[in-house]
Length: 311
Image 1 (tube, rainbow, N blue to C red):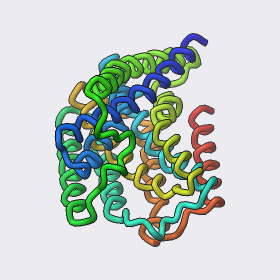
Image 2: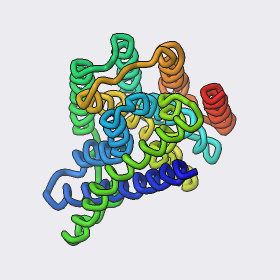
Image 3: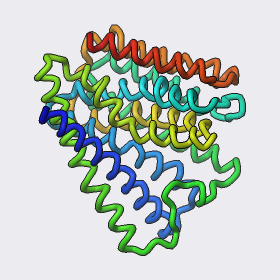
Image 4: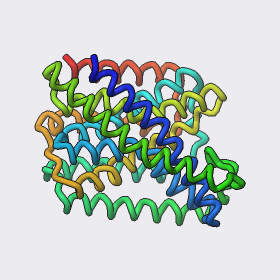
């Protein structure tokens, strides 16, 4: 029971601290004169994935790398089936109007590269450098493409207040920088305790409890957007998060220490993650809307997958 409480406290800290870090970083960047376009593609993108990053690095440092790998693979699966499925039940995601085909192809390429490196694993520093190089190339491509399109307005960035006083900006940054590592440490410790208590592998805990927990910011954002009839924002949220999870998070965690790839993950979970990515082809490349019926199907698919892991 105590481990569950520790996990809950860790999750709350991650959500609160992650939001504070994004708000502080965005306002600091704008105060320093960095264009909103660059802020949106870098600071916000990295900041919203900070919980997953800190949890994975903490897991490797604490000697439970299975949680790190399970966190990333599980988050990518949850992002498709839950972060898209639940908002679609609330309001149809009009994929036909979205221009995310280029980013989606990059996500598929990142998924294929990640799976390949896992089969060449355990993931070590040279695997990590390949992933980080791909992340850098992706970021450069995003900035280059965005510059040819309409400029991003400051008002479109969440938590923006260009006139925020310095004490407020520093306060947000302090809460984020202190709360994130603390929350990550509590979550990893609690999750490891639960795994030992129930005799479940660390990888399964990472694929389920930790993965869903660290995906909560994306899920809450998408549900709120759906309630405002803006469910379409979930798609870009999922694609960007999945790319950063695979390339950035495992890239950084792999530099901290080696990450073994369990045989069970090679045989099943990686392929489920790849299938979850490919299942979006009709909705992105063929521009079909994700309706309520599809959303229900996504959620049921995730429930079946999770049940198969636990049982």
